[in-house]
Image 1 (cartoon, rainbow, N blue to C red):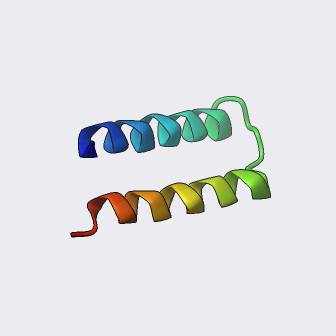
Image 2: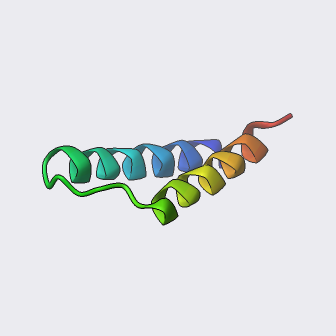
Length: 48
């Protein structure tokens, strides 16, 4: 479960960086909110 979580976080982070740096897209509020929710989910998965 942890490996899949790490994979999802890394792939979405790389996708965001590519969009910002290469395609010069702006980060919108719903993307920030999505990453915040994803961060909370990662914290819950790794919390022991």
